[in-house]
Image 1 (cartoon, rainbow over the protein chains, first blue to last red):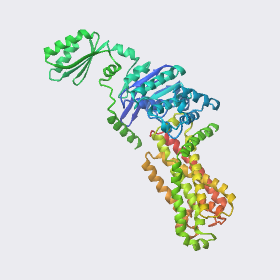
Image 2 (image 1 turned 90 degrees about the vertical axis):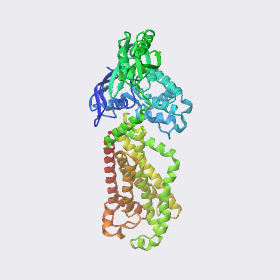
Image 3 (image 1 turned 90 degrees about the horizontal axis):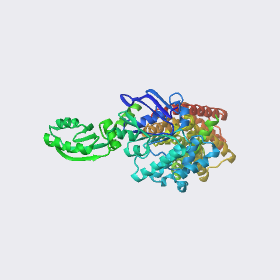
Image 4 (image 1 turned 45 degrees about the vertical axis):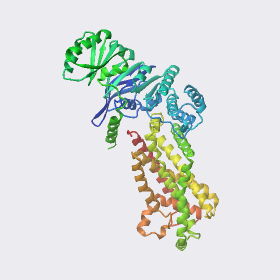
Length: 332
Length: 261
């Protein structure tokens, strides 16, 4: 039995299809990540899996329980840490966890020891009796995550666990997530739009874009499939660009080329031999190369190769507008 | 059933915790009813002969004190549901909705906390009334009066939670609540005896559950019964009102929170 399993899961809001025929399964004990830009359908998928939204069609099972027909069973088996921090500012850290424990029906005689245990794990024991108002963003997030795992759910959902946090805090949160995973052997399902996060944490990644899953594999396999090197070229565009491209494609060890305006990304198996050839072709055709670099493939490159565009952190405004329009339609 | 009570208590506990931590709010909410009782109570002190014509011996302020206690209860409880909107906005609601507790428990917990808070606020106003010279023929009546206030507020908190769950924005919530609150208060004998109202207003007032609560509390405070409405009738109407509101609120709440916010 899989911890999470979806079959052709689809969710439409009016004429916008947020999640489009998504099928995947997550093994017990795995850290599985959904990687995609804002508005790709990650949060919508999580909301379906946590029983907050009903799918338009398709099926989703959590530890064998159908989210549509048996939501109560599903809720007993999940922990859900939302994208926004949701801890109660008026309450102390400990009171927040106490509330979470009660909401999740943890037996009375175990509540105190469980809270002590997670407070210790997220290193907030000495601040536990202070109001959350005094906590930093990172501390609030840790408290939120602690609340999600207090009842030892079979599946812990983390929606963008480090969004809006600085890089040191982000690394710290990753450490806690790894520690949680090791200690409780929980299945963790997370969404992120940070490549590094997916790379650091996940056993397997599903790349999602425009509501569709583009590929599911381990980060290593994805990177290896790219060929072992990446050449990034920035050119000055002119009308011989297309012939330049087709010439490049003819080079034997070039596996794949992605073009994004003046930026070309070549996935190659033998970079040091390809670079001189690139220069040769460019001078023959009359294309000016502004810069060229040879790197190891990153998940970024993987993402570009599957979606044809970069994952952007800064296109939030556009998508927020789209989200807003979507929500407005829902209300009408 | 046991689980429902446990879960309701969990939400109730959380709401009261939040109330306790917002001390400034407690005082701010007292200002308006305090102004009512002090200013209106004295402004209309000249209406004493009118009050006496329907059988009240004391001063106007003693006549209207029960009305202001109910005013406090109405407004504290009908405003009380507004944090449902915050909860939905800031994720607490989703946290509760993805936990095994039932939707009704969330509504019931909120309602019971709101009505207790309303009664606390009302008892503070009662204290102010006593401090400015309102006398009480029978101090033991305070306990049953408070019980009535809690019960009555439960009905109004139901209205509040229902509106908050349905409204998607603060503006809608406040619009509807202000539209409901003031008329319900005004169309009752809280400030003026039922017998002296024009017929059509008296008829409308008799359809208003606030009327019966005011009559009941006033009778308990002053010992004068009014308009030929018996205690049993008043109590019966309040109980029916509360049961309907609680039932309706948990139904509407459950239906509304299952829709995306």
